[in-house]
Image (cartoon, rainbow, N blue to C red; front, side, top):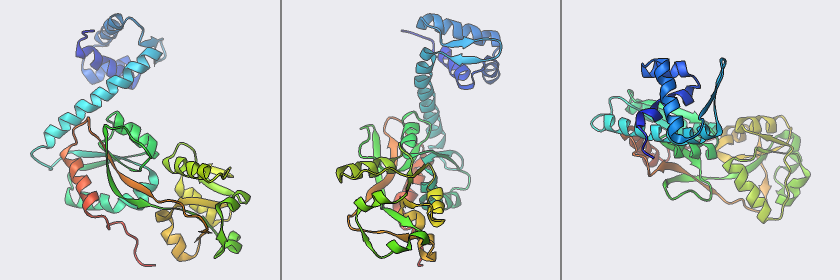
Length: 304
């Protein structure tokens, strides 16, 4: 199927904005020309790509499928353009990073600060999503790099650079003071209200598989998408929260929370940088990775 790339360009802007008039403005062509280009593409594809009425534009199922691939192609082209722009200089440009809220707050902030101090004219664009969603953004070229708690498996076209390990702990506040200093088996946790991250996060997937191997059935009292909320709810005594230890150093030091002393050891997990081998990495993104890999102690907490 030999289709003029300009037709895909028109389709991309209509699909991205769900607006023929907005596509017309972005492309500096008439709305009639936009409509004709879409009609021609639909004829060549042999299917409708949009449903239209006077009030709104929607992608058809075929349009959704095509847009997923066209969007990825456009993101890859933009990444290539940026790489060329930045070959000779780091006086301008941007780094697009994907990471969860907790990784940004408890791990990446010092590295962000170091980077913008060294390269003040490079813009950091950070997208907050769960680790699996960040990987998806990387696949389609929406971000240059992602910093995530690493899942068990990743596709071969994704390159992993490990930056360290994380440890999951169960923490509680003063309402569970009777558990402090007591050796507790994981099986005993079934008796208590547990607060955990919601499903489809790397952390939750990991702990669910671990519990399954241990023949332990855990049904959380509350499931949340925010580590900070898990910490706050544990502090007021709503339950026992499972969090990454790096997120609760200050609360432990202040005595607001304590770690449960478990009989069984929860394995450490790896944290790392993931890049897409199919997409050229911009010079600015490479510099950010250098800082992350070569200053491993930058985010270590101070003494309590």
